[in-house]
Amino acid sequence: MADIRPAPALYTASLDSEADTARLMADLALLVSAGDVVTLSGELGAGKTAAARALIRHLSGDDAMDVPSPTFTLVQSYEALPLPVIHADLYRVGHADELEELGLVPWPEDMLCLVEWPERAAALMPQDRIDVLLLHRAALGPTQREAIITGHGSAAACVARLARLRTFLAESGLIAAGRARMAGDASTRSYARLADGARTVVLMNAPRRPDGPPVRDGRPYSRLAHLAEDVTPFVAMAKALRERGFSAPAILHADLDPGFLIIEDLGGVAVVEGTPPAPIAARYEAAIDMLAALHRDPVPGTLAVAPHLDHVLPTYDLAAFQIEAGLLVDWYLPDRGRAVTGALRAEFDALWRDALEVPLAAPPTWVLRDFHSPNLIWLGERPDTARVGLIDFQDAVMGPAAYDVASLAQDARVDVGEALEIALVTRYVKARRADDAAFDAAGFAVGYAALAAQRATKILGIFARLNRRDGKPAYLRHQPRVWNYLMRALAHPALGALRQWYASHVPEPPAGNREIHSNLR
Image (cartoon, rainbow, N blue to C red):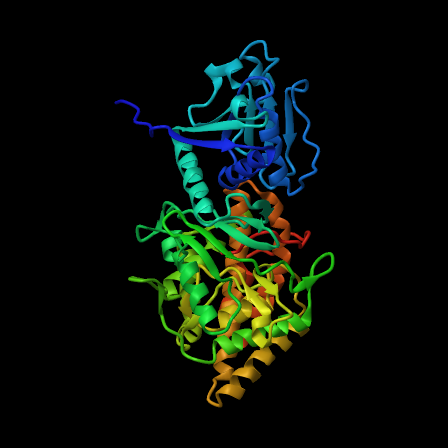
């Protein structure tokens, strides 16, 4: 049977200066990932090393970073970058077999490979790759270049996306804006801060999330957990939050199909401080006040996105809560060397079904879902609850209010002491009771404990999955904080049966560093 491969994708750009080259490579850096191979061809002086240097510097976030040409060393590695890079120059390679000695063949799957002079070993270049050909256009000026970028095989989609992104930036009037890399998260999204004169905005690259393999009832985890598959929910929630006076970023330009957004830049002032980061109590209190204000009034489950386009918020239902909690059984227990039987899993599911009964009966509201310190921006010049900027809410669902309260009061990114946790939850309950004398404080307390335990359970599983599936054992050292949160939540009398099951079957994680760098969904 013939191998059916995607047709190559082609994108051509005129480059008037090194700044143009840097912007093009910054845009490419936004789209590539580990395992990609980018070749750089052109005659001597065409700008191959300058292009590679621009991409590496963009990933580093340091425009002055020393990036020497690998002409003499042949290979230069940058393993500490957010996307590790190996930069090779094959000009002095005498035989293609030398690529194996250099560690290039087989091509690394955990790094981005930049290869100058690929024609020196053309037979060993991977079929799936991005070719960048740089040509002089001396007749138009000494700095004039033309970049011809071709995506082969699976990389054709990346080049087609690059062409769409560049068109989007041009139509938004930002093609000539400066680019600065922004820290991303554990999803497929990536970000850049664009400087247009004195104004800055944020470019979000949010490609459609591919469905994974089925895990239950023929459906993948993302469907069961109601995770956003494209950028539409973000746009819908941003508009809805802003209409109610909350500080979500304004959507300035949008191309919904590929998932490109230009959004308001809320800045980078955090709600934590110090090393290691610790909560700023007054800012956490403001965030709790924001949640109380959000939960004060009924909210719609269907949100307008654009004319003739609505987004229906999924319901945070029992199946979603259970598939998330199940990450502990699927990943954490095996990672700790514990066997999982069908009977053990059935008992676990039954206990969680009972534990979630109270929160699932609570009146539904918007659950932003990742309401914790990395996703909160402090806007001290704004009034009241608008001081809390929101940047991550695309996975919002309709569900129990206690979930977001637990996300903040048991912030997985920083150590929230028990005294501060109690103060935050008490503050929330007082605010809700002040607005509604019929607010069920006792029921909320039960729901809060159950959802805090569910979230901690899920996160323990996520870290174990990062270790076992993704080869990232460093995340294991973050589990002790989450374990401590779990023990606090399970101490509630309503969770006695669940607490006993954990005591019998779930081992405590080893102690370790508690600094966390993951988006937790």
